Length: 442
Image (cartoon, rainbow, N blue to C red):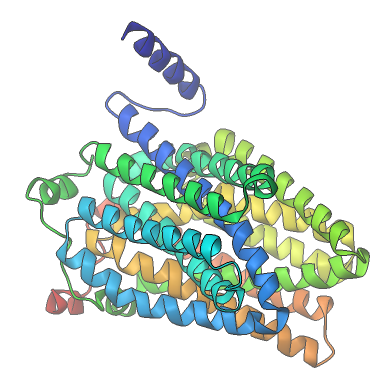
């Protein structure tokens, strides 16, 4: 007992050097860190498997897989909203995560006993994993924003995000080390076990710091609302609509950059092994930069400069980066821009987006947020992908994409600053964003 207490004291002293955690916040903060670690470790094991199955499915089927992901996400929205409307949150999350875990067990069995099932398994697993990624992470951040206050989120979200970054590194490392030794099916089982650990984190999580959430938990009441209220609330709220626009502009720019990557890397590296090694180095550099940004900068920037400035960092990076790509479309410029932009997203933009949801109603934290994080995100993917395909068919390449994305990033910057100002006003008023149609829906 004394040894465990001593270990706990050492952990607290180490964490205290990185982030300001006040008395009474330690258990929730460390559990949130652990929750996010195992969640992203679980996903990053699956991502490598998904990409391998996607290659087996063939390049010609990828556009259909993107469309299938979008349609599956849309179909899942009313089901998710119905569950969270009727089931208390701390029961809803274990049910949903265990449903995903059961799917993992099925996939593991299929990979073990039906080794020649690639024709149907590859597209199904690709779409399922793409939906799984956005959905479970969205539910996680909805739970976190429902548990911590606005002031706490500015101090602690950066540190909590570090847990996810380390989990992503761990999941990728596990797959790289064990894929050849164990095969795919055992890795899927490891992912399912990690997902179950996240369920235990929810069960052990202390009462919320937010008075409105505590009242709901004490009464064991669900969030309530209708199955389509996530969509209708977004349509009736200027604040949520602007978050949608922010997400759309982000994902469109990300997909445009992804297509630029395909063109530039293919031109520079002529065999698949060289391309894989090069992209792996980029991934590693991004994760390292993200780790240091989240540990030393994220919480301080959100706390000192506010949400608006934090959200504006990535659009400014994108304006400069896409402009540079338009002038110098070479490998070195692409690498620098790609690494800085991805690390900037994980280190600043993503935590900043999650802070935006701390001032909306409890229902919107799970329904509207999930709709934005999944369907709106995948819609941006579709727009970016088909825009790139159209430009390529018209004989336009990297330069055209860059000069299209740069002014789009300027609009994105305006949206970021608007959201920052609106968030500050809503925080000062200490009331959730409510529109008249929501009362009627309730």
